[in-house]
Image (cartoon, rainbow, N blue to C red; front, side, top):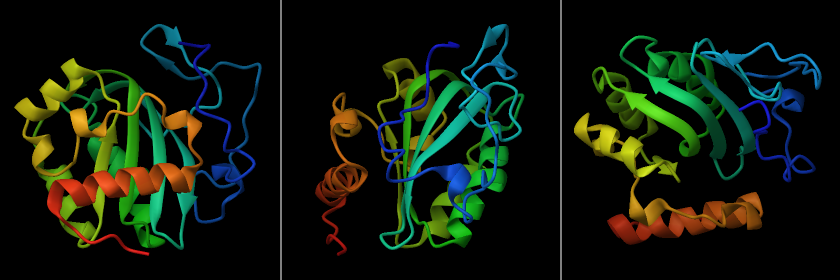
Length: 193
């Protein structure tokens, strides 16, 4: 896992540690010291710790004019023991929501497992977004099944419609438009300009 870096091809457009509205503003990173780990597996030092023992994030893009953020995840999502959704919501999502972000794309191709508790924080997050939405992009099928068993899919959009192996080939606003189109197709919602 130490060789898996967060997606970095958009760094010329956005860097969370340079964004004063980001929860990771002014965070410093080492390329040589590996301090974070999931169980016994070291993580690349570019991943951000938000208080979970097993799940780490990277805000790879945020657009405060179009009100969306793209966040990549790595590790094991554990609500049962670690209450990861509570920590994620309090330490990352609510800060972004306070800055007007109401559309979230969470990329989960590096999320190994999901352990559920209850769905209260997901419901709260969903309700607080009002006009916004939450998309889980590229989560593994077994993780999606775990989300469905826990009824998390009542509050987030996920599944086959939100699989895009080629997401890295897009610029962030292009990816957002593609996802927004899928959201519109799912719900018949009008696109916002």
